[in-house]
Figure 1 (tube, rainbow, N blue to C red):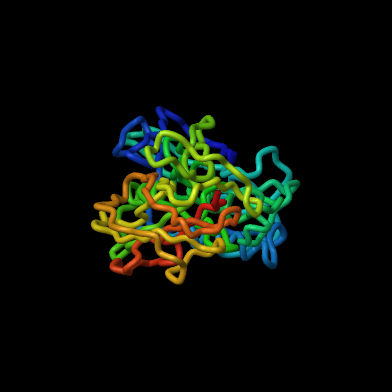
Figure 2: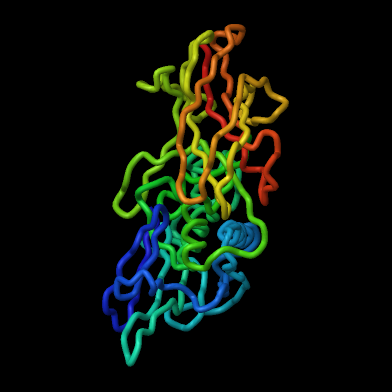
Length: 363
């Protein structure tokens, strides 16, 4: 899990406060005194001695994922060389030997001196230089799929959430919890993203950006519990038709899958999110079966419908009934997939996050 350090000057009362989703710090326990930056942007200096080449690109990609939120707040990434230190008045991103994989060192103030004074002062992100990292978005490199290395952009996106003033969350699927298992994945690529929970938190702290920001998405991850301050995540499942039991698990192409009997109805599970500003209604979706892990409208459509509404303040993990055709080949691997906003009714900022899959083996 990712850890952070806090440095508080003249602390009075400082509490992490959750809304329906997301969490942040409040000075004096007052919801009107949220710890945030005074404006709608801050700068982050990426140390090029620690990160260069493709690793620098991965850090920038993590910052970009954080900036893909519906608030007006932006983290402006620049580069620097030379020494780094905490408390120098600069937000810096660098690597050194530390115990956890990554930390966000948050410096802020909360005190009363002829009136309340509070806000963020400096946030540094530090990655452990002793870990094996990957700059790639390929599943074959990512240790939560079939690889062996930790993705740089995952930890950067999580820690950059602290740049905004967000804190850890353990009560729903979110990037401020288990960010290792928080990806949009279709085919060979696993992309980290900010998500509904953190996007909601960004709007609570900084309001809504003025431009249109619509983005619905689907993932094959779900919350399974809490690990201290962090949500625990695992892959979604295939349930029986009554939704009372999970089908028999099996490993398919190095990923978790399930044994499915053809000619029966099952309930694949997916996590739906609205990462935008407003509730979306009557969202079209289709369920497909594919011969590979890349889901598209060119695959065989098994059914579909509409989701009545999807609000931007809660994560929705749900199961969907689907009939498994009797003509699928016994013993063969397939992938059940979903495409949300199937009819492209929503003008989205990102349409590449609308597909997800679950591997199955027919019996």
